[in-house]
Length: 570
Image (cartoon, rainbow, N blue to C red):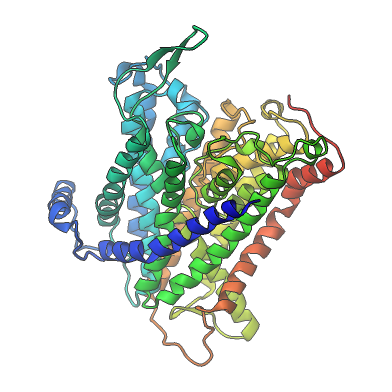
């Protein structure tokens, strides 16, 4: 570990803190229907969309109607993407002549991008045409990201409103989110990436002759436009198989740093939106602080583990940290920070191969996802995931002091606690359940690239990543099989929508409640005591749920390494 390394981490944190209130203020105005500096340009477009879609922007929806609209919207998105992949050989903008994608892989991929997971059991440059990359994947990157944000807004309105039966209008919210937030940021962002050296073209792949005289085909395409939204929307699906480790998806140290900032930007801003909408920005900063503590802890552990490297190599005098699977132009600190950022948020983009991280270094991204990616989290999903833990923490605090739990003026009763627990517990059901099944299926075991505990971690990581809608992978697992494509798709669907439905039930219930003014007995939720309680509840729930599985994977791998036992790759 170096002073320069810690300085990079510190600069990253300072920038995130600085932009949080700026983005929070802007997003609050957008979702409140207030005028912004973009309104003169975009308001006519917004009004035209409502007119074409038959949407009355003044009409708000009940939580059930809001949820049904969201689900139908995603059914349509899934069908469009699935059909595009199945017929891409007959469609234009296919200079490499890509063939139709197999049914099981098309199903997995369509589910993946609709759920904001962007898990990829294929290499983009060798599987998908330009049209599918743009009209299919990039299109869903915008809409799945917007969906996460508006669902968070619905829950925030539940806390902020009182004695009403509506939580907003899904069609209005998703239109405003896409028009006023995602597109205006992504357009200049994509131009910046082109300036940094990222391709943005519809031209054919380029043939080149190497120094040895061999012929090589260099894949290009409309990359920058997809990368911009993949990072900002915490999607993570790469144009190329190597994702953000590929020089065409991440050309420079500056592009790498800006991409990390963009992964956290909107998720952090939503904490400030929450504070503004409930009338006390300190509430948002308290949630941000809890997220920040967990994030910093993960960065410290991961960076320390990667800087220390492998003891077996250190004993041979080959010290200098673990550079396996890392790009030299990024180094250990930027790779470690990126790994923690991308799994703290549900992005899943990678600039280093997580399968090559040390046992403890690789455990940090795994834990980030197992907690539900609430450490900033995916755009929207991180915010509503953390608010579910807030409900549990407030319930625990109420039990300790013998009072009815209250939070930002709302009584937290049995219905909210039950729905929060249902949403939280469905995640380990998928993580651990499918991993256990895979360990009993010979073809699934044969797909592991490594024996022993590391191979087990590859499978566990796959299901955790898909259920948590992250999309990163321990790439040693050969996941493009019928078993992994189908079971992974189920995990993604459950991880996304079985968490959303209980959350929307909470939003509707809270919006209908009266607001209660604070009293002398109200538990304060803006100070260090509440932040500590919230972090403690998250760690305890995570520890009790996931420690046994971690003990079978990265922990025992590290202990075996300390004892001099190594496992050869298959």
